[in-house]
Length: 313
Figure 1 (cartoon, rainbow, N blue to C red):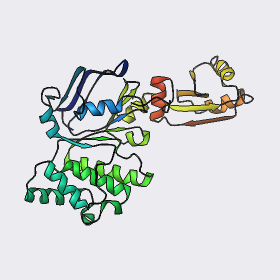
Figure 2 (cartoon, rainbow, N blue to C red; figure 1 turned 180 degrees about the vertical axis):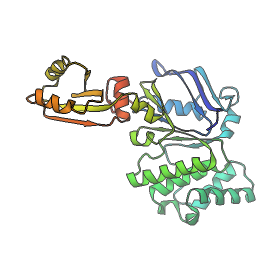
Figure 3 (spheres, helix red, strand yellow; figure 1 turned 60 degrees about the vertical axis):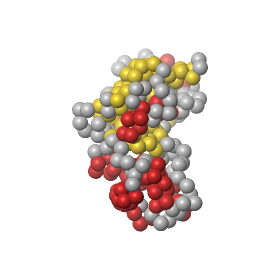
Figure 4 (tube, rainbow, N blue to C red; figure 1 turned 45 degrees about the horizontal axis):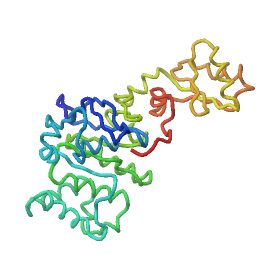
């Protein structure tokens, strides 16, 4: 990664009528970085993606891509972008080559240049042997690779993807993610993606976590997990409110009730689970301990679980 900023969001806010979708969002993405924007439904991810892809314009604040303001230089910004939307944009009745050729025409590539670029991106994404297959004959993972190939034909400096693995099974999801990571590593391209999948965001260089339009966390996944300070204990009880009061009297722990489950984060005491089970066994149905994940980070920052049932973005 370089010190240059590929994307710079500054005090960015956006409203849909009376509803605030983004609330003074400020962060940047470095050139060459693989960056994930993580959040549950309703967090503001799609709005931020629409702003970045220039489908809508900022209402408050500023957004620049490689130093170009999207309000003043939208056409230049679009030239730097490769965009993969959540909804498929390929034609299932056409072959892979035909889909890519149509996209090359839209980008204004000349015939020889288009042929060269189609061969290059197909090789990069492992679909060179499927160029003459119809899209309807391909697996979901391969179709997403074709979507990626389309977005790369004009050699964009920044690849942005909205939920790129939505609807794929775990194997296909891993296949697409590996293709994205290999592409980013081999080309040095900046990659910015939105996701609601915790395990997917965990693979990025850095992540920003949104909740109800606000930025609640920003850093490398490993750093965010480490900030919790230790293991996370989870306790299930038939009377969690009563147990929470009892645990609140214990020294050195800060229990938290989240969706009916008691959590104790940041503990490094290997004997704590055994002591709690022994002392409160009549109140405990199940107790466990594990390393913190991104959902634990989200709970720590927001006070509720990642899947909180928020509305659409």
